[in-house]
Amino acid sequence: MDLIRIIFAILLPPVGVFLQVGFSGAFWLNILLTLLGYIPGIVHAVWIIAKR
Image (cartoon, rainbow, N blue to C red; front, side):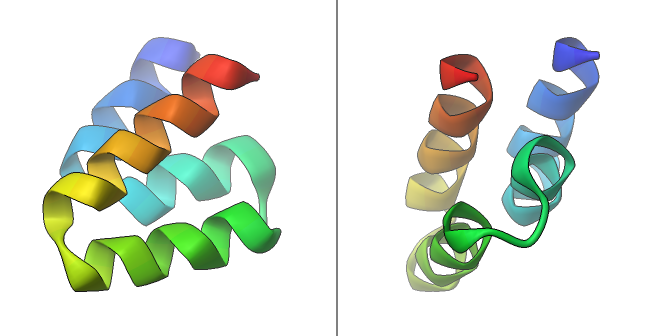
């Protein structure tokens, strides 16, 4: 299941984070980071998925 989340994190970072944590603060932070720059959103999403 983590492999699917990582793939979503690379393609659509907020979806990968949502699958991991739901509508929490990390999800909203990831949306903000993705809007500011796609790469920071990817890094944050992969970090959230790998951490848990």
